[in-house]
Image (cartoon, rainbow, N blue to C red; front, side):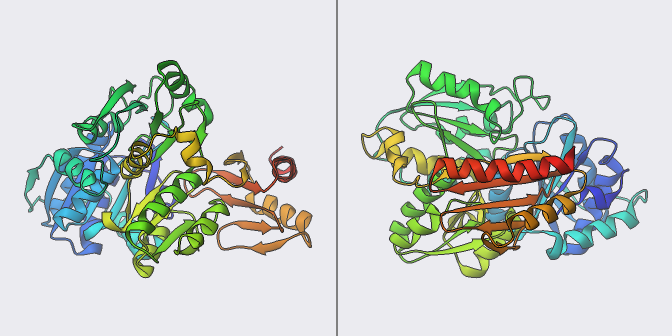
Length: 449
């Protein structure tokens, strides 16, 4: 067992197996989860990592030791777990480390109805109680029911987006050997889609590339396949398939901010005047476009538990993040990359223009993308950046440090899951964005040297 304080993050659990996260820890967390939430029944799912089934079984033993019944959904994506929690009315736990390398695993937890559990909504209490329970044993009292939810999940998603009138589309999907290889065939079944599959074999060792579409090198195979096959678009999913990255017909990446704006416009057409959530790293174009279409944009900090909580508080119909997480009121305020992908397919398939032209209206600024730096003294790096930009823009510390000028901004924040500082910059002019990005990175680099 490792230090639980190290693996319990702001909104999930993430650690190296078995040094930081092992079966006794997972069993203790299972018991603590039931105690803290008061759950009488729990739904559990897991991804394709080698350690996931064993960790899930250990968690189930812990939950049963507190007389909770368990619905074991087996293999699933994280948004399938949210579907299970919402449709069954049960708190749930997904065993996954998302896009992290193979040696990692973790847990994403929610209350009944896919309500998030974060550091200030129960996760800290679960951590503290689990630390007390590690190494203790108790006889199981609850039952276990195995339930296949894949078809219900697929039917539910297709019922949320009207795909009845789309034209035939050629689509390339890179599942990255992650859970998209399990869920995409079920969701796409019966749609007028000619599917080219890349790396659909479930393999938690990620033999082809990391299942992290935020890193450009992990998109190269998909981009090449889209162009070579003359496809209409490409989709890349991360390891637990809750994030989706979009590639246009030219093999170019489509910004998640553009996808956020596109889906927001579609949801505002369905629910006029609604609130749309965007995190502070999303493009300035998103709130502009939301207002132009009669919606109310609300800015929030980064992280799914924060966004879900704000969506529930405000009744927002949709929310988007720079990291290709997309949240839907019609999906229990939870995130689903697959549901966002269906919206993109509908928007493209309802008319004849190529995707690059469809999304052009939603791309107004030049963005750096997320640039990560390993920094031993993050506080010192942030201090130096504050000092360098004093008097040059407005400061905002909602999440890390955001500095905004008249036509530019940047955000520098510590990762919630890794020992990194993450930089995002944007400007109306590409040269201005590049200059701002490089200046900040130079300051941060001096601290990391």
